[in-house]
Image (cartoon, rainbow, N blue to C red; front, side, top):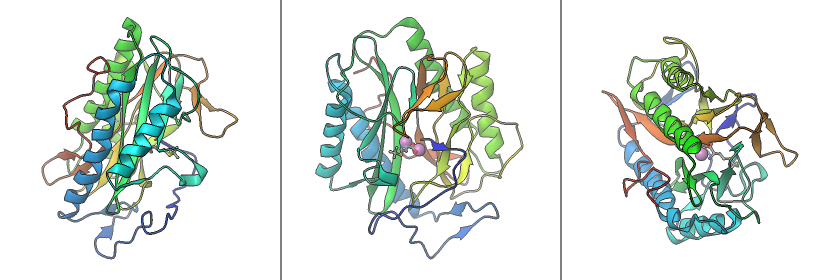
Length: 288
Ligand code: MF3
Ligand code: CO
Ligand code: CO
């Protein structure tokens, strides 16, 4: 999402779906829920649906299509799967996806705007399957990808995987943030500070704040059974953002291009499982 780092967590109830209805398991001293080994299967089902939807929209992302048309297709696919969109009705949001074009960092609202040749965009989908949340986003291009946009997208994707590689019991959330920040800044790009990843599971947004920057060894210690997102936003220019008057759309202040990838992951006894891997093995914007 990127949740806005300056707001508190609110588990907004959506009838029968959004509340944290777990009675077993426990919270760490940092308020992070530890899920049970059998809970991974539910997260895989939700994550796989969200990822499959991102696979299936790739073919419709061409110059001339509107972001509203892409969102309508996503909403239809969620319904076809007999799942629930986590974003429709979330804090007043009315769409099944966020679609963030060019200098939009995150939370772009789908609408009438038509994609133009060379536009890059992030599509972020969160679904609820049997009460489990799957949250993932990827980059796409309409038409021809420019060299500088391709570099930005590749660095952002690789930064996410640097973060994922730091996920194992005993490491800290600061280790994840540091791995991402060090990689991105070595490529002379910047990491957005104003939005972060989040715990999820039976709720959409839960502790901790998963920062995409930080110092090694700081922050909460990772334990098996923690479920959270990593979703770095990377800018070609400066890291500062602002939110537009619609109260959702976050843009780069300097209007530079921005990219983001997001996976939902779980900490295992030995490392990490990614819940939102592409069933078709896609991620690259030119793979269609
Ligand atoms: N999917 C976003 C995330 O990664 C959250 C979107 S909230 C919405 O956390 F209301 F804007 F859809
Ligand atoms: Co998220
Ligand atoms: Co998301």
